[in-house]
Structure formats: structure tokens, C-alpha cells
Length: 569
Image (cartoon, rainbow, N blue to C red; front, side, top):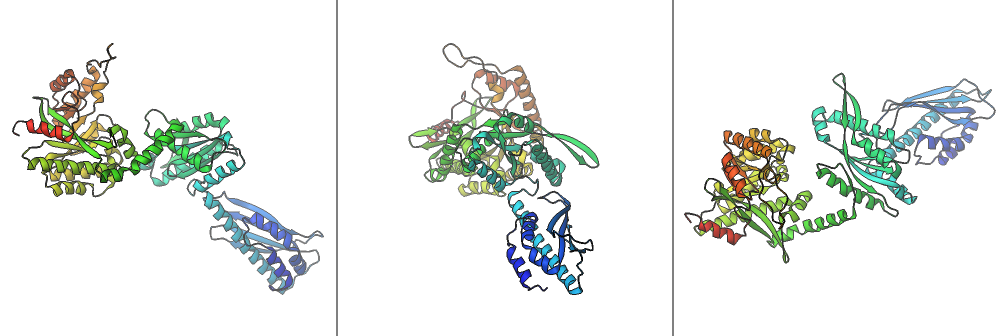
């Protein structure tokens, strides 16, 4: 029998091109193999597979599939064809003759050719299977990927079973520090072990998939939710590092959305993504449940963010200046530029839009707008013969991703021909955590140009003393929380009482001021509202103060009037 015989052709025509696995292919071979077996006198045909583990499947060890079996029996005098795959796997086909069948050389050659063709068909089917798995599987962890998650949810919704489940957006806490301390390769190993540990606790109709990085989606039956939350609050892992077994706990935060009947896949994914962002920003709650008003706020934030470019073009943002005074004589020594948004007939305060712009990542354009306006005003005052004082402008840590951050700041001053001594750049203390090198580089460039820099909200982070020692800043601004935490109960007439700073806070303030003075830094305290606070700060050696005791943020014209009244103007 030849390759082009009628029996061969009928067999090949019966085998589809799109077999999704070797198991599926074997079913087609079993149904179509009879004409070939009769022509060649084959009594039995089987294939044994061995394959090492890979990212998408467990190892295959001696898995034998029967492809054909003749009812009248066969002899043991088989022909064996062995093939080695590129991935280190092995396929062995054994072809047995029927009882009494003697194969001549031409028939043996045809059987070898047949075995090679079947092996090629099996290889294609196995590759198709792996490609299908890869399309829905995360290569690092073996968990379902984003497409796999969507497919699972879609099937759930199609069955009408979605209301029995809760969706969770799970984020591993501080995973960046795990990879920094263990290295990226060991970080991937942690993720694999984490996923295996979670999967060990799931039921067959539940899912834990990876979106990417340290982010996961879980679809859990409602009755198992409490146990799952307890599980992810602290997953205990063991890992071999440098020849030693290391144990550690991996904690996670989660946004939680109970799926409702009729929800689409898009609705589930959108709603579970909202509370995780709140959980990430929270210092007190790791598990945040979705509420409808959250979605309304997100929509509002998007609308506000989308209107930013137009608002900048129309100059709807206004600069207000809050005075800073020298505590020794209460003289005006500086100011902080604070933003207001004149939106229609409303004047929006910073808390109504700045946090939203920071979350959306669009705050950077507004902060350079503020710097531009401050420099424009300073140039105008100088032209009028009014001597300005140094004005601080706030910049968020998002700018540290801009490699030309320092050059962009300097360019604004040069455009208005402003002396560097009139500008101070305020950076929040938390700016230094994610990219200290970029922060240090920026501060050094500002120092070289003569622009003052300061750390805002000092004392609210975790690395305050390190920042003092390692950054070449000119000043620190003590956070107002040092003064406000001692507030007392309001009086009967509803007025806020004068309060004393708690003794513990006073000790902390004194320590920070003394250390800053030793390092040659200026110290300013914000949120000063009472004469008692001012006197206490003065006694402790604080240089400057800012707060309602010395003046609320002033619009341009009122602040210009205060500048004009300064001695020498």
C-alpha cells in the first residue's frame, strides 16, 4: 500500500485540521483507521507520550492512548517508532501485526511512514492545545490570565449563576519590596507559590486569576467569601533561599463586589476595580466593599479630569497666596501659592479637585500652570517696583517620572527672567519613597541653580530622618497635625476652643527643630491658628509660621496690597 492509495487518502480526509488535543485527535484516528489497518494487516496501534512540565501544563508521564485494536487479536512482534520533541518530550508509537500476519519490507516502510505522519498530527494537536491554554493562562503563575478571567465570568453569566458569586480585585501588599529584597526571579517564584496556595483552597467552580504584576481577580461563591478573605489576609509561604528554608507571610488588600443577577462581564470588572483603588490609598482598611456612590464619584472625577485642559486654556484656575511670617517679629517673609478653580459661579477649594487630579495623574499640568502664573505675577510686581518675597509652589511626586523635571522648572523662571531666590519648590515627604534617586537628583539641580526646595508635610511619613540627612533641601515644613491633634471639644456656642499642643507632640517638634537647625535647615510650621501655638513654636526655635493666625490665602490683588505695605515698598 502506498501513501496515495485509496485507504490512505480516505484516512487523511477523515482527520480534521483543527484537533484541539491529542486526546481529541485519537478519537478521530480510531474512527477512521480501519481501512488502513485492513490494508496493512495492523492488529493494534498505540502511542505513549512523555513530556516535561512547562508554564501551561503538568508533566506527562507514560500516557498511553490506544489508537486501534483488531477484534480478532494481534501478535506481540511489534514495530516501534520513537520520536524526540524539541521541548525534551518523547512520543513512542507501537504497531502490532494481526495474528498470522507477516510484513514484508515495503509494508514495514509504509508503517514507519504512517507512524511519522501520526506523530506529526499528534504534535500539531498538542501545539494547538498549548496555544489554546496559553491564550487563557498566565505564563508566570499558571493561573488564568485576563482573557481566562473574562471567559470564566462570561460562562458564569451565560448560565445565569452570577448572583451566587462575589468578585474580588486582590492586590498583594508591598510586593515591590519583596522583589527588591529577593530579586525578580525569586519574586516570580513567590507569585507561583502564592497562586498554588490560593488554588489549593478553591472549589472547582471558583477562580483565581492574574491580571498582571501583583494584581489578581477572584470569583468566589458567596458562602465561601469569609474564609477566602481570611486566607488572603495572610498567606504563609515557604521558600528556599541560599540553601536555607525561609518562611514569610504575604498579605493582600481587596476591592469586593457582590455580583448581581444580570450583571455583564464589563460591569463586574468595572465595579470591582473601583474599591481596590480606595483600599490602596487606605492606611486602615484592607478590604473595601463596592458602593454605588463610588461609581458616581469616579464618573465625576473623570469628567473633572477631562475638563482640565479646557480649564487651563480658559485660565479658570486662580493663584491664592497664603502669607508666611518670621516668628521673631511677625514680618512677612514668604508665601505659599495655593490653587482655586473658578468653575462657573463656584470657587472650588483644592480638596474638591486636587486629590482627584493626583489620582488621575493629570495634576502635573496644573502645577506647572501654577508656577507659570506665580513667575508672571512676580515679574509684574517687579515692574511695578514692588519687592516680592519667596513664594513656594507645590509639586507632586508624579513629576519624578519626568527626566527633565528640573530643566522644565528652570525654563519657566528663565522665560520670565525671575531670580531663583524668589521661588521655592515644595515636595511632599512621600515623594522620596518610590524613587529616591530621582528626587535627590532634582533637589541637587535646584540647589545648583539657586532655587530653594522644601519638604512639605514633614513628619507624616516613615523616613523623615533619612530624608533630612540624605536630601540637600533648604527647609522643612512641619505638618499641621502636630498642632491639631490636641484640639478640645467645641464650646457651648459652637466656637472652636484654643487648645494646647500635647506634651508628646511638643517633644517631637522640639527634637525635629533642633535637628533641622543643626543641619542648617529652615523650619516652618503650617496650620498655626492660635497665639499659644505661635508662642510655643517661637520658644522652641521655629523660624517661620503659616496659618490663619497670620492670614488666610489671599487672591492676587489683596496679596499684592499686603506686599505693597511691607517696609521698603
